[in-house]
Length: 154
Image (tube, rainbow, N blue to C red; front, side, top):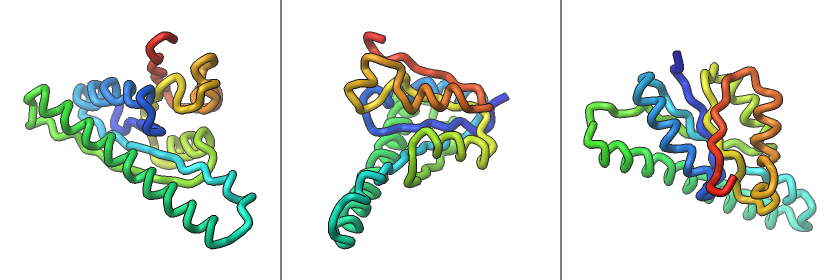
């Protein structure tokens, strides 16, 4: 039923909660997990120097790669804990610049994603009081089944 699972992550503890769910479904369905981190550098356009913007973008992209690499590591560790090394989950990573919700929606269509597994909120403090704005926009506009993982205390 599910061949490609999109796992958007911002590197927060809350987004890490979605990893176990995505992994469990991927193992059961023999599906690929597409790990996505979006670099939202729109606020950099107000910076005065082109060099400063370029350096900041490079730092953001480097941090994003650390996030996706960390998720891959967590998945591998979870697989090892289960002791089922024969179930080598296929994973791929994407680091894309743009608005997080828009990118999630674009990738889900462009890459024929069958399921999105996403945390109900991420890094921003306001998200703790509301369904995260990225999650809400994704759920409202996607054509793909979406599993929203609540955060502790939600």
